[in-house]
Amino acid sequence: MSVTSSYASGASEVPLLGDTIGENLDRTVRRFPGRDALVDMATGRRWTYAELAADVDALALGLMDLGITKGDRVGIWAPNRAEWTLVQYATARLGAVLVTVNPAYRAHELEYVLQQSGIRLLAAAQRFKTSDYAGVIEEVRPRCPELEFVVLLDGAPWDSLLERGRAADPAELVRVQAALSADDPINIQYTSGTTGFPKGATLSHHSILNNGYFVGELCHYTEQDRVCIPVPFYHCFGMVMGNLACTSHGATMVIPGPAFEPAATLAAVEAEACTSLYGVPTMFIAELADPGFDGYDLSSLRTGIMAGSPCPVEVMREVIERMGMAEVSICYGMTETSPVSTQTRADDTVERRVSTVGRVGPHVEVKVVDPDSGRTLPRGEAGELCTRGYSVMLGYWAEPERTAEAIDAARWMHTGDLAVMDDEGYVSITGRIKDMVIRGGENVYPREVEEFLYAHPDVLDVQVIGVPDPKYGEELMAWVRMREGAEPLTAEAVRAYCSGRLAHYKIPRYVHVVEEFPMTVTGKIRKIEMREMALRLLVADGGPKGTAS
Image 1 (cartoon, rainbow, N blue to C red):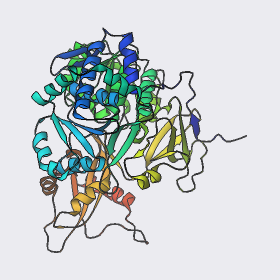
Image 2: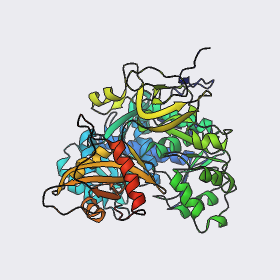
Image 3: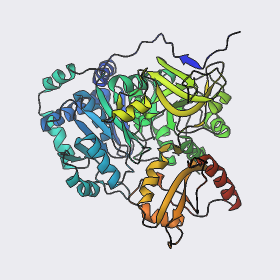
Image 4: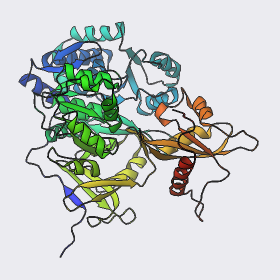
């Protein structure tokens, strides 16, 4: 009897889309001009598909008037809002490459992204909560010579750009869009780097449009659906699985607020009769725990997407029973794969949805290989998960060597995740070859945090690991060796050092001062042993002693 290998391909009778994002939007506008396209709950504004297309075209023409052309990088640095979505589709119309910037970035992170991608125009919010975006931009702008234009989304600069576009000849935009290819790069998304700096995953029209479309297909979206999107637009979860899944089906994008708030999200679902709701598990936990939860009418919900980290079984049951999301789907992927590679189906059991990340998506291949030999393993054996197909990125922007480390000669993307594929093709993620930490859906690579903390004058050496956390899935712990004569660092001291300079989710919650790190006989640091010791330390200490984020 032959042993089945851990390989699966997503056969589908539905063909891949061959459009650019702009062409696909045009098709939807022709089919559903009067249907709701976009609702921004925070401002009370709403657009039909015809109105959305008109504003997208005006913005695209305004950008053209400034001299933005195909291949130019246009950055967007803002929390979720309607203007974010307009920039997404306007840049796609032009063939400009949209660089999505995490709203939590601080000055040194923004400066790196501006320089590394060569952004010509940055669209940004004036400020949000404690973040003074305009002030940070002015601070770093002198060191970013390629940044020619800054357009703040609040007030005159934005309004002026739209007015310039409305006065322009729309035939010019038709001409530009006709010259675009679905294989052109259209989006750069930065993922936390293992060498101290993020990497710019470069994605095409073809990859993200099709990924959004097929995620929506597996959620059974039609023009009748209304999708509540509290997850961030700067990430694929928001702009691909959210926005592109909607516009490729004629569904409605509902923005409950600029940043996630449980009550605002639940209120948006009720007010707009949303049929689908997105979130990482911690978001659903917060919604279920909201004091006013039972007062919201969520009867319109039937589906949604949960991704970012494993979902506890009790949370999944409550999402199905108390929120009515009987068809809720689990998705797995990474920015480099546009992002989704595997997904559960609407009729999968609760057990499948909490113990696996589903089966391979349409037109995608996955396999589980021996990390050392590259040989495809038999089903049931753990190895590295690899994926191939339309969804794999073009590469890391301007970094061919790092691209070659991630994508092999046969175009398989090596995820770095340890996985097992069962006899039915369901994939379970069992760990990570790399040391990436997923904190509340945010990917954090310890090396980036380590390199930042190395600059502390009292730190001799530092290693960062992930430790379990009931709220965020994982939290960061820094193991620190102090310079001779220095006072031991506390979590509070680390927070003070990092605050305003490092994104909040990258700041270690725990700090453990040591004389030496556990090492192998060949001198390599044993992070596995550090994690085991950290668990014992946390248990012995009775839980958190200091919080740095």
